Image (cartoon, rainbow, N blue to C red; front, side, top):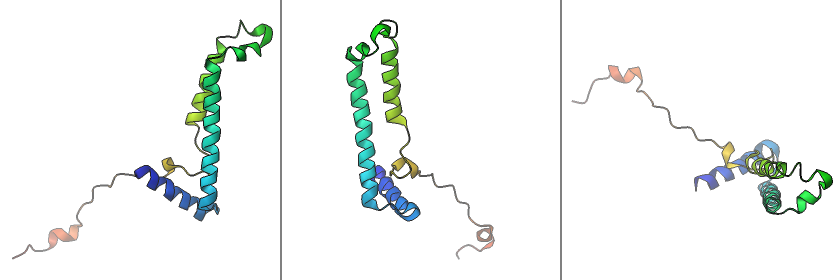
Length: 114
């Protein structure tokens, strides 16, 4: 519930600050989610296949170790890159713990109940 609440408040913030309607913000979020899912799926599919190595031609044997590393970097970028400015994100609505409040000095001077 906390994530959904923060996400919906970020949609409202985008509407007020940038004029992005909540419907458009939802479409932006779905499009970005789809692109990230496609990148992760393509990279994970490429990790298990040697067909990508054939694209390198004569350099395939000497650079075969780079392909899994490159695909792992692509997956990390797709997962950990911050969302675009017009896409709602719950991570932007950070909650801070309530600071300890002290009683005002005036309360110390009042008399106690009789």
